[in-house]
Amino acid sequence: MMHKFILSFLLLLLTAACSPQLPTVEWFEGPTGNDGRALQTLVLHNMPAGSRVWFQELFDGKTMVEGPEMHHYQGTSWYIDVPHHGTVTLKYYGRPLPRQRWAPEAFILQQQGKPDLPLETTYHFQTLPPEGATPKDFSGLYEVQPADIIPQIKCIQYGTELMEPTSQHPAGWYRITIDDEGLPIIEADDEDGAFYAQVTLEKLSQTKGSEGSEQASQNPMTLEDWPDHAYRGFMLDVARDFRTVDEVLQILDLIASWKMNALHFHIADDESWCLEIKELPELTEFGGRHALPDWDLQETQALKPTINGRIGNATFYTAEEYQQIIQYAWERHIRVIPEFDTPGHSRASIKAMQAYEQRTSDNSFRLQDPADTSHYWSAQDFTDNVLSVDLPSVYHFYDIVFDEVIRLHREANVPLPAIHIGGDEVPDGAWAGKDRREMKEQFINGILDLAEQKGIRLAGWEDIARGLKPETEARLKRSLYFINVWNTKGIEGFPVVLSPAPFTYLDLAYSADPHEIGLHWAGYVDERKTFELQPNDYLGDVIGVEAALWSSQLRSFMDVTYQMLPKALGVAERGWNSNTSDFGRFYSIIVKREMPNWERKGYSFKRR
Image (cartoon, rainbow, N blue to C red; front, top):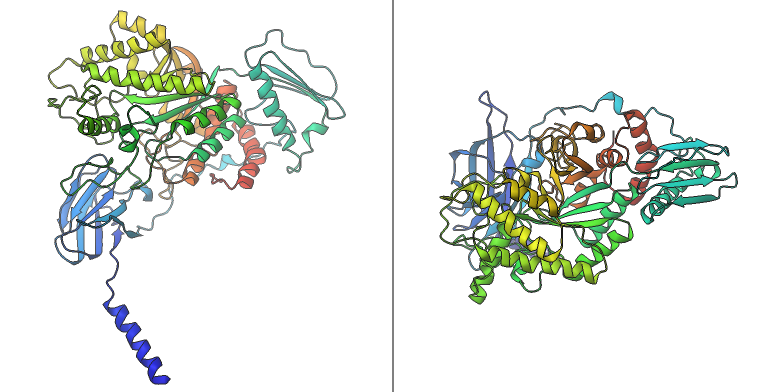
């Protein structure tokens, strides 16, 4: 028996020794030199000869020191051709990491004739002390009262004495009177006000058991409340990091609890097209799926991976799923405004319609002229993401898209407030040989033709309203719901929704701490920064405010809630109460009222 055991053990060792070891990746962050660059090291272990390794990273010019060259493909995609079998080491100078999330990620091994293989990656970061420490005055020192909730109620009177009612009732107004037996009487002038009263009562009931408070419904009181702004929005980008239907519904529950009333649904961009359009199946079968380019660097079956590097998964909503989302939102008094970003940020639709044309030989939906010789570099490092707006086929395409969106809302019995057309960040160099202003005029007027024919309103980023001829500007205003002000102080004469990046972009990091996630191009955004937004400082007819959650740095639903909670509440507060100024009270209410609920639901959030 002992001989058999020894023989079996030796065979096991021999088998293990002969088994090929799996390819893996190690990445080492080097110290920053006096010249502001960092020497970084990438080690590819157990690589098959003649293979290719893809990864994702925000664009950064690299100076190679050792090893094979890294090649930039499009956007955030890079690849390395492996020269030999075994271990391959690359050393290069690059920018220091602002935060650890900025390291290269999503390494995938590509071999001809074999399935693509995601690679396990180990990171070795520099040990650095946290920067941008949390200010001490974040601690909640205010003694929270029974009717303190977010957004804060405008008028509160405790006891049974009658409170003098307001003489004029804005839209969304409500009044709650709770007698000494805890029974509420609700008054409201419209359905929105009645809904907000119910949201308030539900929040008051959750105060039972909170530290230092009694059950609110046991306290006789009178509450009177209304929103200062008609539009209180949340922009969710699902094109760069997709969110499932269930996750979107959870987000809707959160923003409804803060009395926000609009979901700006960013569902088409360079990286993905996320809504099924049945007449144009390639939009989602190609533009809503992701795979590595083939060996000839062509995207033949799907788009290249987004920055999260995921491959093989469908990242779009069927028509039925979209209707489920908009119905769920409407039940919570939230209007959904879908966005299809144009005429820049359009790579997903451009590539999808190229695939459609290849399958059908039909060029009537062509979005980019094959003869275009433009050379440009977009904000997200694409060189092929701008529509050829002088092609009639562009407007034929959006005619079909608009009709489908209108149909989906009509059949779901849900209003369509507007279709958002984006309009931001058309890179310099696009539309080579043509007058940029004339191209913009042609595009705006072409989209307005569709909007006027179909009786729908448009929304867009502030860029669409600048540099227009007077007659085009006047025409745009007649069909315009709003423009999002994100980069300036606004535009006189236009309906404005405030979403200034330094105050409302939730994807910006909380601080410079290297362990935080997020960008920092417009600074750092936390709950104090969102609370400090001052709508009266902006030009134009300000109809509301909007928090924006771009997803290029998100990798999970935990990332989503972490970046939302609690910083989104400053925007919700500012939308409901334009001028509240006591941050200590505001933050104390969050700690005592909101955070316990997030804890129960298992959400990730920023703790102080």
